[in-house]
Image (cartoon, rainbow, N blue to C red; front, top):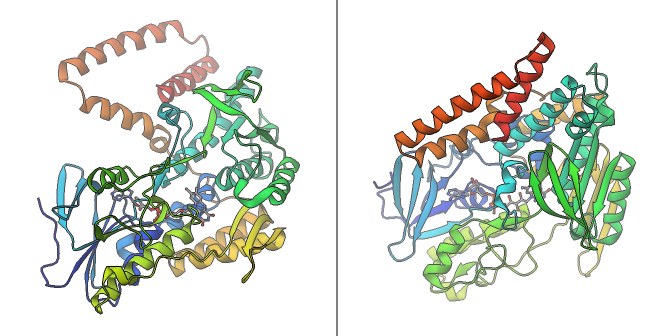
Length: 498
Ligand SMILES: Cc1cc2nc3c(=O)[nH]c(=O)nc-3n(C[C@H](O)[C@H](O)[C@H](O)COP(=O)(O)OP(=O)(O)OC[C@H]3O[C@@H](n4cnc5c(N)ncnc54)[C@H](O)[C@@H]3O)c2cc1C
């Protein structure tokens, strides 16, 4: 089935992805004499840098994820289509996407691919079930459910070992996302949840930040890394460096030390923020054009961000591998705008070989650690040096910058109000968790299993499950109301784990 593509004679620009690269490319083409079709897997543009604030109840998901079609509604030359692009045909110049059962083929004259990156588990994809990553709204909401769910289960448990396991939170990966998450989980348990439980003391929760690397926040350099680590430790976060996760299950994880010894940490709630893997669409480009990929699956683009023999195909953002360009929002924004400008210049007669190479302007980087504390690094123009600072002023700078890049006035205002509430009272307005959020991963897993099995297979399994459930039920038969509650909680945990 073909897509509702424009019928005008104007060049048709197709953009894959509604993240920083895709959205900013589309906006840059606002006044261009082209038709633009933006195909996105989600309905929204996601401001990933604030995902951890959704996971820890500071802001609502809508505030950092405005609907892409609403953001672009006044831009008449853009059509937004929802779909998961699963095929790019460089010869036929088409992209094929799927939305539920509907397959859509969209032809293009120019293609901007900005499909971003996913979490990498370094070949251990099964870890994802027990340690979700931090890339999407679904991840953030699931994580919020897991964090708060662990406290709820601990409140119901009278077994000290189980309580300790439930109140141990492990964040794997001490980059900016890991640091931000560990800091916020510590603040939430120490301040927001303090006094809200009767049988447990949330301030006794252990938050562990671990990494195989020897430093916290490696991209920020040794000095800022040390300061961030000291600040986290002051907040009670345990930092374990040189520790590589070699196994992970529902109840904990196994860590290998530098000397080769291993140890186990009992923890129900784990988060993975340790690596990235670029969109698999890069592999298709490599197979069809011979372009190389780096170890993280990023496309080693030419200096004009295109691929060999295809000056009409741009790869931008987290999918591109360009020396000196980090996988950050600015890299994607500047790449997306560069591609749009190249398309506009071509309309004015510029040929692809006349394009100036893409050059990245480093505006600096920041990471928050806690309320009133952040680290910041800004290049000093004309030198190779960087201005570094940490603490309150860096934190204020972080707030201001993130407000500027958040899309939509109302989102900025709502965020500002939530921040004011969270930072002045230590309260959080977004602590709701729904059953569907908590069980979504299990339910989706079960559905896909169903899709891949025949009816007799599914029926046979269901009968087997009934037998197992009956056996479990008789074994766990409660002897009192209190036991009954525990048994239900256990069943829920088992369902989540399966
Ligand atoms: C938790 C977290 C915190 C971060 N913090 C910071 C920070 O503080 N500062 C900073 O500068 N950077 C930060 N980053 C990095 C920054 O968000 C990314 O570098 C940036 O989002 C990359 O932009 P992009 O457009 O390449 O990809 P993305 O923003 O990831 O967008 C990719 C888009 O493509 C869509 N997509 C993917 N596959 C398909 C497909 N097959 N078909 C259709 N659509 C598809 C996705 O749904 C998404 O809309 C953070 C990232 C994360 C995950």
